[in-house]
Image (cartoon, rainbow, N blue to C red):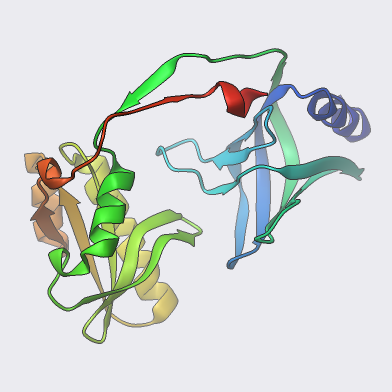
Length: 245
């Protein structure tokens, strides 16, 4: 399929309110609360029927970029490439441009529905909100600067300063494994390079696996136990159905 036909197919599928999944080699530019550029790489681009846009790398569970609805998305051919442009139609202003260089796979689905109720108790969002309101439980000198801080690597749960040193905090509401330890290490290393100064990193969870603890000790990253039972969260029931309309 040439780039013009591919761009036309994207526009038709999104216009019909379909869910679209594109596996491709692409680069990404983002404007909004921050400015970021991600170079060429193989990624999974997901458009939901409610116009949510999510971009994942092949590894990890957090998106490298995303925009919540409502968004306006269109695609156009640019030589052999396809430019996908998406912009939020309400405040705050956000804009993403995805340059697709090579398509590995393309699928679209019509009429997807999920009316299953979600029964949520303690989540990482609950932890984040609690610690944002009680920053001294991270560290007695922790000063919060941002919640869900956007970076090219993903979103930092908590970002701030301990004294004069910048700090990044990763939260897990279950036992933290090696992937969580590697994740907070990547965040710490990126901030060090970006800020050109030392950065403290803290992983907080109810417990941590032995291999995660070993890596954290080796890297000089702090682990702090967090008792999720202290979170007084009412059991809530939600449904995904409104998001699929």
